[in-house]
Picture 1 (cartoon, helix red, strand yellow):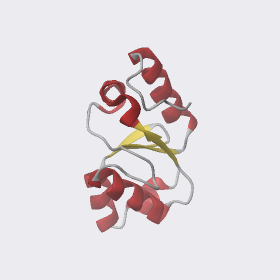
Picture 2 (spheres, one colour):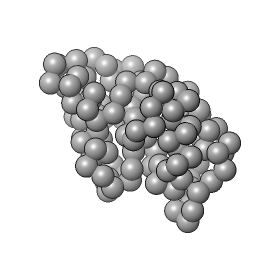
Picture 3 (tube, helix red, strand yellow):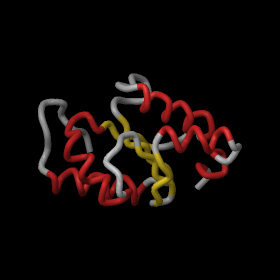
Length: 113
């Protein structure tokens, strides 16, 4: 589902999009921007770490409706922060957690769904 960058979307629409992205993808990263053009340093770090260990994964740009994405993501992770990474439907964490897992040599195994 593509979102128009002009304004926000109904909460139910965003909830459905988040639910489907988590359910339908082995690894999904909710981030600000895109892998080619991250729009914050945390998203840039997160996408770089995931790309380091995994060739294919899904990303969702939350900027089209940031507040609604925060609310939808909190339902799954208990956190409003962005970026957020999910593997096999389970919340892994944001860029800080990905960095710690990488430093401990555990990120590769975590991302291999």
